[in-house]
Length: 279
Image (cartoon, rainbow, N blue to C red; front, side, top):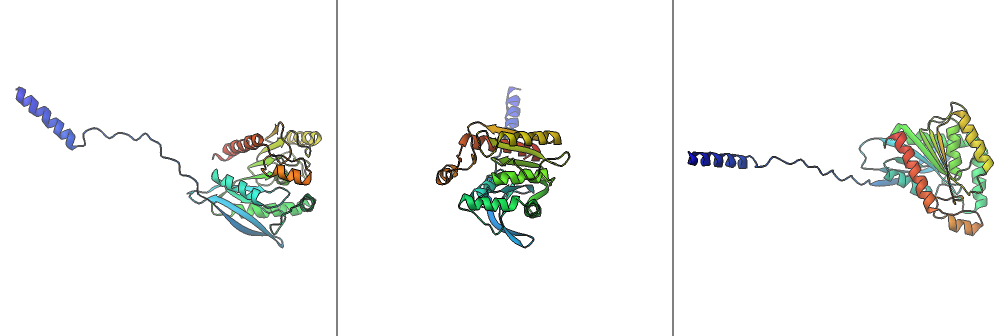
């Protein structure tokens, strides 16, 4: 009997071994995320008779349509800085279009010229709106973009542009202004602003006055807008631009890069976009 029991046990063990022995173990290790492969390309688009030169950045490995973000340049024009921010947005999973508000990709190398460029656009809001809308239509029509999820960011001059476009009721789900002007050609009205707004402001920026902040926030409150204004202590104008210090010294302007304010304001933008777009 003992021999039979031993043989039976051996048979069971051999059968288990033939079937693979132990039950397969579940792989609990998460797959490593795929690193984005960002590509950037120069694009052209038209508004009236003006040729606009933009820069589109996206992750070519993305397998679904993504939210689109417009990036509006500083008063210097469509330059490397705007394109770099577009690349950074693409690394986060967005499709970003660095726009051209001056036409033909014009850039200024001196504040006098930059001021003339900016004034020529913002003193005629219909022109500014047409140029912005041309970029918006270009972004929405891109095959990588979900046209129902669109945002915009802007720096300095560009910050004023994106806030003005939101105030004018353009179809923008989320808008972020970095050290942008608040003396806007179009102020918010009840029911017009369609998306959430972030205003990242340098608390010590001499180009944005306390009166402008008070007027803007009062108008936003009256309009029932969903917005957040953050003042970064110790930050002056152009606080997100690494070139601010050298430009400030070169032209005697109160410009300075502030790494902490730059990082914190970018995180605020990421939080806003995550809330709105779920990315």
